[in-house]
Each structure stands twice: as structure tokens, then as C-alpha cells.
Amino acid sequence: MDPELIAYLDERFRGIDASFSQQIQGLREETSQRFDTVDKRLEQMDEQLRLTGVRVEALQGQIQLVAEGVAAGNENLASFKKDVAKEFSDTRSLIKKGYEELDRRVKVLEQRASLS
Image (tube, rainbow, N blue to C red; front, side):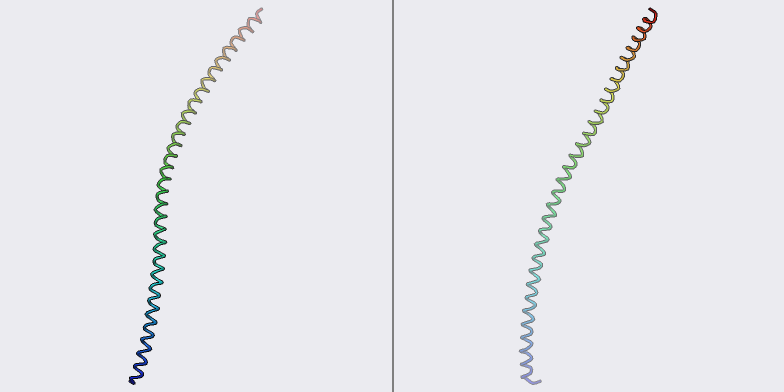
């Protein structure tokens, strides 16, 4: 081969090689920056996920307290219903006895009135 052609081709390949190396370096830097951006986003998401987990745990504790309060309220309400039902039953019995006694007395008076 002609030495001038070899020199020309060497020069062209060096230029292409340098340009290609610069492009590759630019792509490497851009890729590295994008990975850094993705890493930062993932770190932020990890932090948000951790905070969400902490909040969920706190809510679970609060929900447990509410559930226990509701259960205690239901027990109190059941006891109250039972007490009120007994009081109504006792009151009805007293009223019924009072009316029965009054009815008996009225009948006695009516019998006396009819005899006179």
C-alpha cells in the first residue's frame, strides 16, 4: 500500500476514533447522570415508603384502641339494655299489681253498693 494512503487512513481513523471516544464518554456521563437521578428518586421513594410504613403502624395502633373502645361500649350498652329491660319489667309488675288491687277494691265497693 501507498505510504501516503496509509498515513491518510491512519489520520482519518484517529479522528474517527477520537470522535467516537468523545461520543462514548459523553454517553457515559449522560448515563451516569441519569442513573444518579434514578438513584435519588429511588432513595426518596424508599424514604417515603419507610414513612408510610411508620404511619401505617401508628394507625394500626390507633385502630386497635378504637376497636377496643367500641367493644367496651358494646358491652356497656348490652349491660344497660339488660338493666333497663329489668326496670321496665319491674315497673310493669308494680303497675299491674296496683291495677289489680284497684280493680279488687272497686269490685268490693260495687258489691256493697248493689247490696244497699
